[in-house]
Length: 101
Image (cartoon, rainbow, N blue to C red; front, side, top):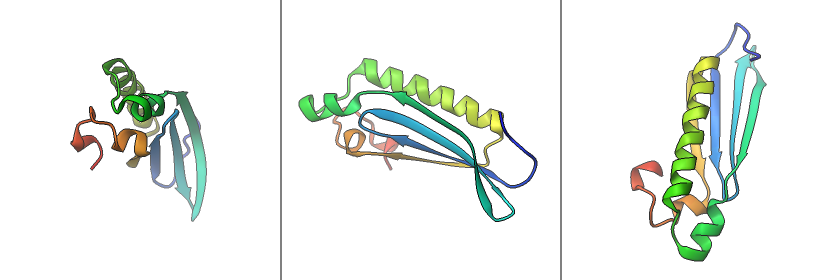
């Protein structure tokens, strides 16, 4: 972990069609410093674009990865975060709407 005393720490999680990414940064003296970058392969796009749905197995895997990312954000002392998703998640018929608002 590369946390240093100073500015606020923020994270962005990108739920893509084939990859789940997270980047943690810190604002120090007006400069954005990257502290960590993680990625995990997750093929949501294929399921959605061929069948319109995300399998429960993939949703469980997504949930597990997000839980791990949450724990890492806590270790860094993340002050704020944002989660964004591509059309694969937004168009899936099996995803609860509160996930994508």
